[in-house]
Image (cartoon, rainbow, N blue to C red):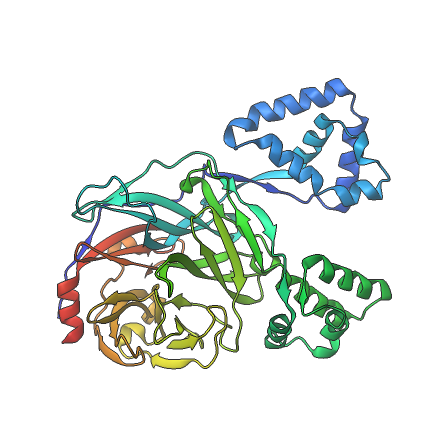
Length: 485
């Protein structure tokens, strides 16, 4: 059965002018020499160089002086090594040294793709049929380093998107280290990561049942002071990597959402934050919380993580646990099913799985609910975002990979009370790359990380060959009739 898909003439392209001011590590020797060279300048020369730098870059960033000071603080170790009292640095010297430890990074220079759309918290002052929405994107810059960026806008009664103006400055979040860790859960996660007990026990044995970050630091330093083997050092790196995977971030409230970027922070995501799938989740008490599942990647290891927010200003980041929390493609259902959290995932990289849990970060016992069936999905099948509730069942937008690694988008329908039961599935793709959509960072790909239902239509944002993004709409009545037939 043919289904009409209306592609909208809206495109989201990467913009290389959107830059963040990142900390840049010049290396130990260079940093020592830089500090000594700045210290050797007379006050007039320091002021002259600082004024020139501020004049060139102040308009490109929000409060560049504060960024310089923050990056100067990263040099406490080298300053101590040089035996210099930090109080002897003038404010101008601190700012200038901080500027040498700063670089601009264009977060969208390579691509802006894999979008996800959800309803905004604020639905005030809208006309009939309008809905305010937030679209997230995977922004990719130099070195294929991925982060999360946002756009806000309004869908009108005809599901035409009217974007808000994109602001100029990019606001980097303040990092708040998680204050307390549960030792039992932490040890179980170490076991899941195959870190031998003989290597981790020397660090964990002296910690209380609930420990704080500084307590772990003390335990780590104690082991380092005694000298450790190569294997123990590797275990220590893994433990530190895991602890740094728990954190909170907070943006300035006076920043626009288009200025906020969730940039890789912890070592576990040092090579990128990939494919965030946002979902508007209804808690047991009826309150609403925004969650997103994403993949953290450090160049070697994949770690599924969960992000949560109540306002898109503060975010909590947590790693997922469990034997099945080992791969990509996690998508949380928008509410509990039979009293439990539920998630879809491509656990083995090929098939679509369902899992239940009492906690939204613990996932075991995956149940296979779909495997490749049609030629356009013979390589693999997975979800394209959180399942959508309909009275007929859970609508799951899927992706399939076929010949020449062409990615297409499909759809399936599952039972509301038992999502292991597939009610219907499209034999043909809902969306395939058009001729003009085949070229990009990764050719022959259409892909989505989250859609929504609005005004009787499926609103489906999608990536165009991993370079840019657009969206399409599908009449729900037509789609549901096709799925049920």
